[in-house]
Image (cartoon, rainbow, N blue to C red; front, top):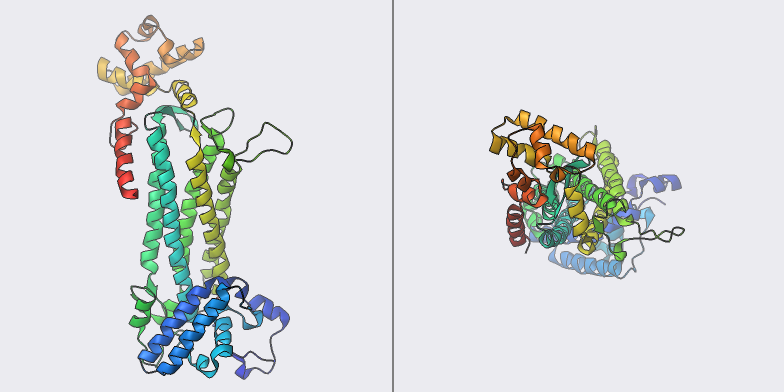
Length: 459
Ligand code: ARG
């Protein structure tokens, strides 16, 4: 038979293939809480405005409570013939309370309903992502505190560049994840306007109170244009953009963990709890969680590109294309939350190998810049000349297979006569990092100041 919700003009029901391509209930049942909250707010407003009776509103409210209880208990039978969560809930409400259920959809459309439900859902995800990021920041902060002055090589091009501290490297990610959390909070603030009451696209002639439903659902205000309210999904795109940028940060940290945990680096040891073994090679302890987080960026970026592509070129107002918004966002949100939790676990559990970090920091001529700076400061050389002299000293050390501090004063003076024994002080990695006291620099004093500031913000 034809559809009970919209079948008035139809004499035949949909083809099975039509139902298969059309139904969203398989995934949008995740919006059930939001859908019921929206209906509750709408019914209460309709009664307060005298559009339906208080008795009907009470029956609707109690019926919605029962629907919610059935869904929570896993007893609700979702039906693809009823297409989506909105019609599944309303249909069950009709079973439970009879005719009053039919008054709920007064002055409302599934178009403003779905826009409202989805905003509520994405809004919660923004909060969850920001919270997950703060947990990760706290784990990074604990690592930074433990090794605020441990030296390690800083890299450019993955070639040894200058010594930095472990604490400084950890705190770099604390800053990145703070911006990510800020992006989720910004997106949340911008999306917190209520589409409900836009109806199908043009608003309604019923004397509804949009400010009341907006307030009941925790929105700052109703959206000001009914066409915009039902037809944009920029809030979901912003969430996905923030998620994609965050996933990029997570994947960069993952890549570092993969490199650092290798036998060649041994900078960190991952815990057994966040590692896996090999079924053939008994010695293996693999950083699978880091690799999977590194890879999951693909799903999240994919979701962003997919939804951008869905929305591109859609004429106003609602088109069914927009039903494709949900699975992308659900998958991206689930993926992001799992990746954040796994990264938080890995970081909390890992052991940084202080000795290996320090040994690596001292190798690879990492204090060559300190030597050049010393020549500028103490011998008055222009930086370009100091750079050249230092390069010659590095070449000499490399030819001999030793490091810069292993060259004798005579050898150094043969390259430039102004060098004195005082130069050896700047060739040590601890002096090197301690000297970098500029704001945001790697000196332990700077790093500790940043740790203290973040400790205050995160507790
Ligand atoms: N399931 C639909 C969606 O997710 C709900 C809105 C349907 N509106 C309509 N006019 N068919 O977008």
